Image 1 (cartoon, rainbow, N blue to C red):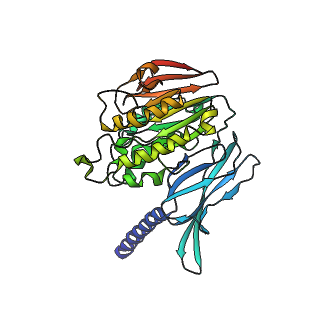
Image 2: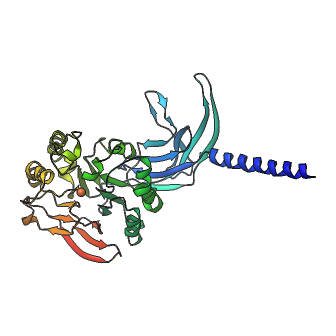
Amino acid sequence: MRKEIILLVLMSGIAIIQSLAQGIDDLKITHGPYLQNVTETGATIFFTTNKLVVSGLMINSGSGEYELIQNSHDGLIDVGDDMHKVHLKNLEPGQEYEYRLYACEIKDYRPYKCTFGDTIISQTFKFKTFDSNKEQLNFTVFCDIHDRADKLSKYLDSNKIEKQDCYFLNGDIMGHIEDESQLFSNFLDTCVNRFATEKPFFYVRGNHETRGQFARQLNSYLDFSNGKYYYAQTLGPVRFVVLDGGEDKPDSSKEYSGLVDFDTYRLEELAWLKKEVESNEFKSAAFKIVVVHMPIIENKKNWYGMAFLAEHFGPVLKEAGIDLMISGHTHRNAWIESQKSGFGYPVMISSNNNFIEAEVNEEEISLKLKDLNGDIEESYIIEKK
Ligand SMILES: [Fe+2]
């Protein structure tokens, strides 16, 4: 009798261990999906899995039938055991697409035979491509979150997500970057839970995101039109020019331990900017907005990085006649009139406890500065020149 009881206890213990092991071993989507680099004709979708899989997306462009899209590089279809990045191309402007994540486990990867395991096809998400013929664009800008995912979440409580076309994360979203888990816990998971499965965000690197041992990997979690942290994109009536201001102190500062080279980098970026402002896409846009973490303004109190930007980038942007610059970094709200920035454009700076909602139509840019409670502190209108 006693033996039977012991046997039963042992057997149920084994069953529990087996079911726990089974649970741990189940193929899962661990983070995401989130949208990046959505354009008129393309989009990139990121997600992670806990096992080695061949990944893809099931896409429905309105016909009701899902087509499996898989990316390949150098002839090999993408396979991985963590982050998956699926790029879609040849999409139609202004069209809504439904998508499902696809992941098929590779249990045993041999040179001449692979054994496949479970397949996941996720729930359905949807997104819309941009359309440069559209005269309306709504967007929201967050900056200087400094790892406070709870703050980002609170901002979003008062942000009508369904009204937004996209988001900008305008730098210092993290204080420094140590590892992958920090990216997910401190902002990415919040973006996914609130909006990023269906609305893209555009990342603007701040001076703090250049710090920490994982800073060099940040761009593996993002996608940009030209693969750089400085890029330009036409979204509806706006040509956005996103700039990377680099670090705020001289490269030789002891805090950087001799591991940065931002003077060289900013000059490469400047050469790119000079070409961008001569492009048809820039010149033909109804509005030109620069999004940059550190404001580019004339100010005798500028630290090294801001002084460098003012000296080299300010005159180019003045000549290009941009309509607006949106910045953060100073942790203080400021509205700098065109005639006071030094370069003929207005600058809106939001603090580390405020965010910006913008609505653009063919006539004007309307800007609202909101606080943590969602109350509007300031509003501005920029009329078309
Ligand atoms: Fe900053």
